[in-house]
Image (tube, rainbow, N blue to C red):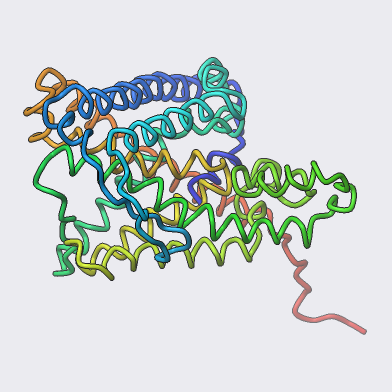
Length: 371
């Protein structure tokens, strides 16, 4: 739904200075927050490889869990070098940032056009939209948690290792295996069958190389696979029409399982976590279908890796100079989330009112007519 605003909103007053100023202001805020993403990403590398505790952990070897399909998985048969595993994780996130920057018009192009009224075009780039998306998902999750807590439904708190570096390793590792198991594999498999069975252009994709390309594209870039197969897609038809009913069903199912998974195992979460995790999983899944694999991975990275350094104990203990900077970013994020939801609500209300006005009026017959 949220991504629908990104792809569908068409503004009625293209020369509106207020709207142009608002978009330009968002462009500036987006640059600041994206810069904080990259800064914290580098902080994580330094935290792991340039602190005593991180160095001690990096030389150890551990068995890591691998999730394949929902909760089905296994531990690595042999212990893996922790430093190598973290370096691999860090490189994957770096590649996700690179693709998010380059793909779909590019971040720099989106920023250059941020004062434009073509909102659906500038938000085609995921990295440019990420500050808005992440802040809105965060504020939605917080609203759910506080609302449930007010009526006695507790969310709990995840139990992390007491060592801050081990805790950070768990949080950094989680998004990759969880997005693979809860989004890329189940939804990706569905889209493979969807494009090959129902694709209008599939008969024209006869070469083996093109079919292999379509197969992998369905996993890594579902939007592109559907467009290649001649199927409705988000960029051309919007979220509601660009995501098929069967995809919506899978999005809801994967989100529900994602929510339940947080409380099925003793990890510190309580029953209230199901709803907030469902909402997060729902947006992760829609982002995956609309933007590609880097979208949900980076959104999940935001909640695990990025937000870890907003913990005052961690920030004050290792990066004291960043405390005030991160506090400012945190305030900006909350404000952006609230403003985003307000704009989303206003846009939805205006669209609803517009649809009612467009409904044809049936001619009224006089109370008495002569044959």
